[in-house]
Amino acid sequence: MSVRIDALDRKILSALQEDASRSLDEIAREVGSSKTPVWNRIRKMREAGVIGQQTVILDPEALGFTACFFVLIRTSEHEADWQEKFLQVLRARPEVLEAHRLAGEIDYILKVRVENARAYDAFYQAMISEVKVFNVTALLSMEEIKSTTMLPL
Amino acid sequence: MSVRIDALDRKILSALQEDASRSLDEIAREVGSSKTPVWNRIRKMREAGVIGQQTVILDPEALGFTACFFVLIRTSEHEADWQEKFLQVLRARPEVLEAHRLAGEIDYILKVRVENARAYDAFYQAMISEVKVFNVTALLSMEEIKSTTMLPL
DNA sequence: GCTGAAAGGTACGATTC
DNA sequence: GAATCGTACCTTTCAGC
View 1 (tube, rainbow over the protein chains, first blue to last red):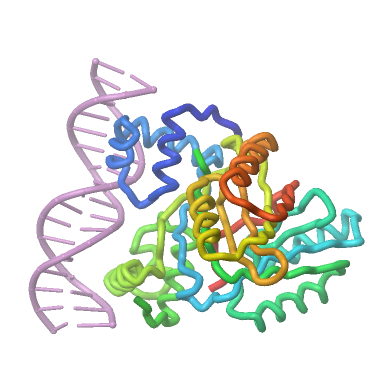
View 2 (tube, rainbow over the protein chains, first blue to last red):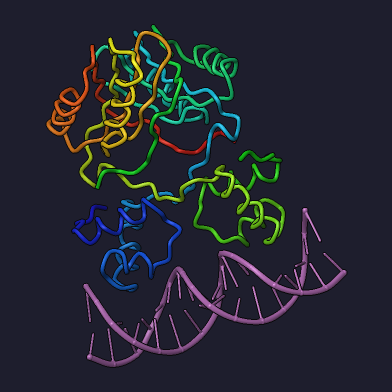
């Protein structure tokens, strides 16, 4: 499951994060190695799950997703059953891009991307009808200052 | 700049989001078209910026980024100069994966990925030394329930 | 663990309808 | 707007160092 990641691995990961469309040759040149070793390392890291999904970042605005909310949730329920149900609901809803369970007063935070405020309300109504929550605060994003998936390797 | 996105475009985007490593042939088959039109549409959407960076999702835990914080920031400063400085600071810091300017009482939210709590404190100290903020609340993630970059097309 | 080469597949552009 | 084809390049494997 786990792998030792050395300096060369980190360089490879960094290059892939930046632009996964480049050829092995280019990446090998950039990290100061050659094709085969780079390819073997990538394969191993894929198998180990260090490298996950290969994807493409789309422009949400261009596709009509003009509203982004961060949702702070408090609950009075802390049983395992309730939590399991809640996680299922979150995972099933594609507009929930991120969900974290938190330490402290606020129990959960969600990042929700939708077409507009009405679509958010539809999501909110659907969520509270499926699972009981104590308090919900929605923070509306006015401007996406920064958004990256790149870890600071 | 902007493009009309039709149903076929959406299918293509959806397929690319899911797995950008597949060949044109496979994608064409999946969306019910053939290579050339699919390729032309992808090229146009890339040029228009609808399709952005092609990347790889890495496992943060496997790479030692065990701490994730959501940071709620209030400021007393609302002049353009201050804001410009603040944005520069956020954009320059690679541990800030997301930053949004918000409507309402809380002015900004950040998502910060770091090695551990000590690294977060280093980030926090650095940030407040560079720019004046009124109030900062850090929410510590205990569990990443869900994390995706895929828009619900 | 690295190098080099070889085979099969793939992207991309030109051309044609 | 879509199919066919050709070339250059790219991925993947494997034998030898």
